[in-house]
Length: 462
Image (cartoon, rainbow, N blue to C red; front, side, top):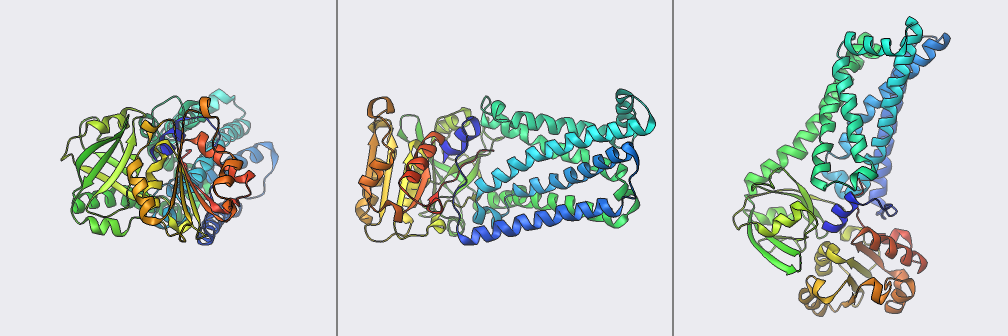
């Protein structure tokens, strides 16, 4: 999943359609969206019951600003909760769905905040009969907590700018990740001016208490799932690097051992990933997502990484004994998505990593499991011997598609896939690889008549 996570975070290519989910996940998604919508309705009611009759342009503009501000204030903790890595949501919906909702909501939030600022300044200037510049200065420097709120708003706009597709594809994943953490500071700084200046909270102690509860509850979940649980697991399992093994040019596997790994393996599924933090100079500040490239268990965890940047390249130089903090497991790219006893695993490049684990463990009918692996050359194949051994043990089909596109053309075409699997429409298909391969494969599968509900992938286009 290394290629999927980090390439998607940097490229500007359009993201593939959202992957299929099982009925249970769809139920959870509808319930979650219903709760979010109900919360938004409560915010609208809060504004309505505190708003008297509106007369004149100044009041209309100002009250519009109040409403947009309340919605922005509600959206902030909701977006944080989506990325709090709550196990129920992550393991049913998958990190990609949550990330898409977070990214879409982030764009809406920036629009809400910008509209709130413009309408409030305009409305107050109409009320006081002053210029926009004078009114802006008056608000920022003389209203309680608005200077902090202004700094937080500017930070929020900065995060929005660096998260735009055009900017994101020009920076390293680690740089984007750390800049994105400024969102927490921005939310903290903007929180206080909502209570100090929002008429709904100044006049209604119960509304103020609910707002505190929303933000403090969100903060508690973030603290627990993103900080305390990983630290607890670090001291419980005492993970450390056992070996770094070269698998192919620019590709290494990192073997991690630790204490009570059977407990960790029991709550981990093939196809899932962890966010790995290697506690060594130059790497300790970065937590990067890498899939397990072998089923959990056997006394070790294995990830396999292709050099695509500073962090991934440095893993080849890890020394045995290096302490590791692994946050997870995350993701819903597991056998739980399977609807059919026939399964096609379709990998490209280092996207083989989660599919290698699934190839060994995913349930399938006798003769109903197939792995197709696209690589530029035989040298670029990862786990070739392992895959052949698994195929022989499970009676599965294994097909390597080798050669650069300039020489062999595009092998992932509907006609070629149907020649390999005439009953392709009856298969569940798991995809992992570079975004270009995923798009091409999805188009081919769609042309071949594979229902969208049977096509599964996880991408991390944030």
